[in-house]
Length: 206
Image 1 (cartoon, rainbow, N blue to C red):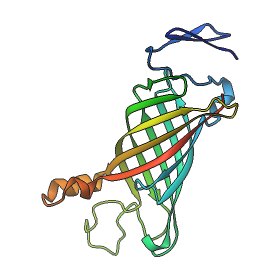
Image 2 (cartoon, helix red, strand yellow; image 1 turned 180 degrees about the horizontal axis):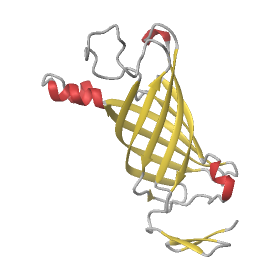
Image 3 (cartoon, rainbow, N blue to C red; image 1 turned 90 degrees about the vertical axis):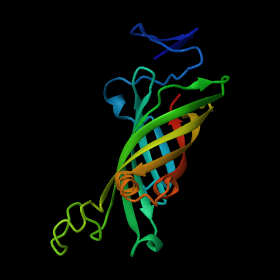
Image 4 (cartoon, rainbow, N blue to C red; image 1 turned 120 degrees about the vertical axis):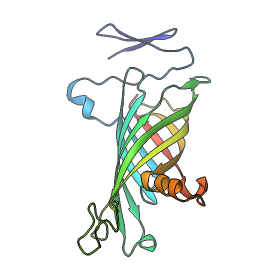
């Protein structure tokens, strides 16, 4: 499969498809066909963010300019944060509207956003309030948390056959429980409800 760059357009050889991009937005990734689409396009590692202390995962990018990403993570929560060691599982959706290329090696994604759902393994957490508590005493799930986030990313083009580029990112996130608590408690500050996380993404395949 060939890939040709012509000014502000990128042409994929073989099927005459054309993807037009902004001159400063040069995001192009390998296009997979058939079952190859199941192959992850990147791997990630993230610190904090309500997904455990550290989480690792893989994902797929897609869309006309590869502006969408779907990731799946497995994280861990050490025993000092719970009674015993816990695993977390996260499904994450990212939207990256644009990228700014400075040269052939460096690019900035000045804004991206998304949402994710994270759950934690263990009988100490529940999706539905247990019968031992008075009705509606805990009117929320302790096992599943939905988060929203915004962030920024910096990309370094490696150009290796296996590793296309490496991306460093940070995110600011909050979940529905924190947001509701802020609305009902005026003494809480943004610092109390926002969470900061950072990580690395490795884009696979040249």
